[in-house]
Length: 546
Image (tube, rainbow, N blue to C red):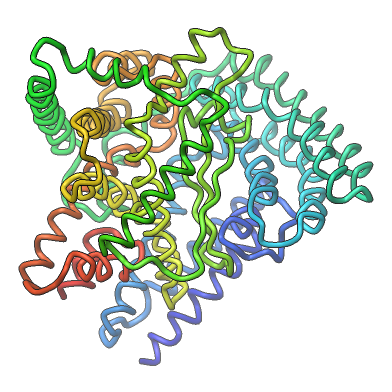
């Protein structure tokens, strides 16, 4: 028991140090002591942080865990694997040397979180934002010093350039405008700091155009050994890249056959593509996009309560906003931002990418097709209730800090849960129209394609162009959205496979739990699973079934 208590003490000490060194992560997780700061990204500081993580890991690995309770064993496994993943990222993936976008995400993400999360009065949050705006030129200078242009994958340089071009509007426009409304005393300071930050961004854009892009020849692919290591160590699965690719193709073929059968039932004279294109033509107008999502979220929440699908924790809430401009190049449709694990106010934020009013009409229409009416209820249940929002609010109620940090490793469960909810809610009749079921299967086809592309991009030499064409041809994604998807896949090896593989793991887990507890209701099964927090399925099985 002595080592168990020591483990929890050390885990909290390590988290404290991690938050101090990573102020933006601290803000996102809900600790607001360093809200006016950005990280020291100099090579010396990054190297020192890596040394500290090695030392923490070494101490943990020296502990005798034989007497730990089951929950403590699970928490211990989480922290050990999280520390290993940080070391792997720094020493093997090396984004700090290869991804110029990382130095934009630090200030932009840090400021965006302060603006959208209403954990304190806006003037207080703007004062913190001012500190981060003032530190932005330093961080961008560190990026210019650290990045090795010839090691940068061209697609990462292009993505960073697009993000950078959206950033000056935040610094020179949005922040001073917010201050004018809520904190006039900060308006001049924010305007001056914003001009300096916007100028630093312009210099970073010049760096990307003049130095990085002409030399960018790096490979985004991590290669099979590292890909397999991430599967084994972070997702804790026993399949490798080769088996994963086989499963991806199996699921793609199976899902396509289901779609074709359903299409024949709907209208034997029309193809799947024709039926979906007809459905996509029925979408809300651009100005009603947010209100359409709000209605869909409210309906999904009501259904979860009325049909006793799972308990909704008290005090949670969900707010819907537009995607900030700097994130639009990588979020084509919509995304969910969970409340921080340490945040008192458990408010999730659903961000929707609006249509660019200056884009050509055909491009605007193409974007709106991604928000077609038959799909809105599916998106709402996936992102909100009983999907991501509900699951992550449950996870944030966990008693121990290591368990709340499970989300660092639990992509398979987190993404799998939301995707599992789609099929489960269809079985319960919530997604009832045949064209909605066809849309749900179309999304599953896309998730199967993600498995194939995840493995192929990172271990089989597939190019960005080939992957984009694959999504357009196999999944009928619009080209601009397909490219945004593929850009994300190149930066997140093994994440794209987690949606469908996670869902398959959860379906197995539900079945096993039902066999072990034959009298359990659906709500009891779901509450038992949600009550474990965010865990890799292997640890969740251990927690639920022993």
